[in-house]
Length: 191
Image (cartoon, rainbow, N blue to C red; front, side, top):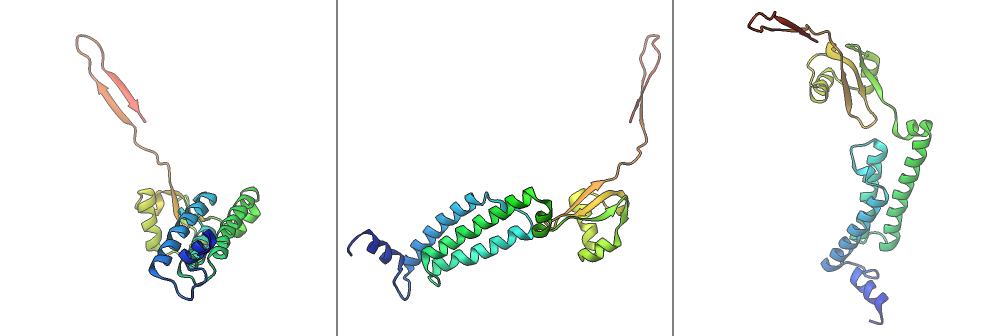
């Protein structure tokens, strides 16, 4: 071996027709470190519970960088493509932050499913949400058991259903406090 470049080519199997276990392991370590850097550049946004826009990047990025490990694509150009994808995603996210029209185009928009205790049938049908799924979301996300208890429920861009409880008139609580030795009873009304 003539120098560091030859050593790197041998370690990574850059010129090899097939990769050894050790070469794939070294590639995996390097790809892992590069993927961590990509996530830092992408500000971890696409790994959270987000929109299809974010999930798509996660799937494509995983597919692209895995090729660098297996050797099915050239090593360094494949890592470069991963950084380009994260940079493109970040750029579109910044533009979408500044333009509601672009944000709606790439991320979609939320849909009102329930308003004032009434299910919005057209929105439910467009969203392909069944009654059981809607009731489940009310229980899980709003701790409610009835549609009539809901002020609003939205299908969010992330696919989650957010629930806002209706304000209800509550019977006031009245406390009677009796004080001894000639002092009158004090009545306190709460609510």
